[in-house]
Image: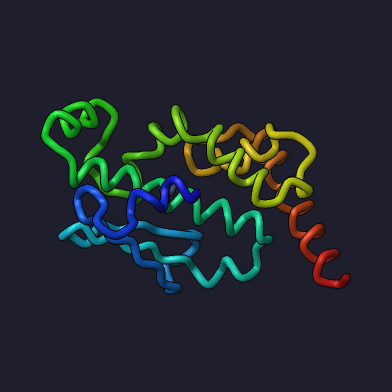
Length: 163
Ligand SMILES: [Zn+2]
């Protein structure tokens, strides 16, 4: 996560900025927008209050990854843009980077989450499943597994709060 943040530190290439706010964005946990002039805005939904801390971390890293890919897309030279066209559907910042994230980021995202809290799940694969949500359409088995993981994470949070 720090590595991704470094891409937005002062005097970064492209002079990109990242801001966070909490705001109503419907039923989605987070949203990343490019405002122009190198400014990215990540909005986190108040509905995340009801989620476990590992789920909130998942949304944060997912959105920061969008901003990172958005930075590469909007602020780098034309050849990057051309390469990205192969992946990207131009419908919006929210959609285009999921394939790239699925292909290149899931392992890293999972490791970040495991580092964030290694005691929520037993194995890296569980963190990977959490990281993979929204990146592709899951089958029913995976959806069920994901729901079970989220439920466990919530219970673990509650146990922590009680102690
Ligand atoms: Zn997304």
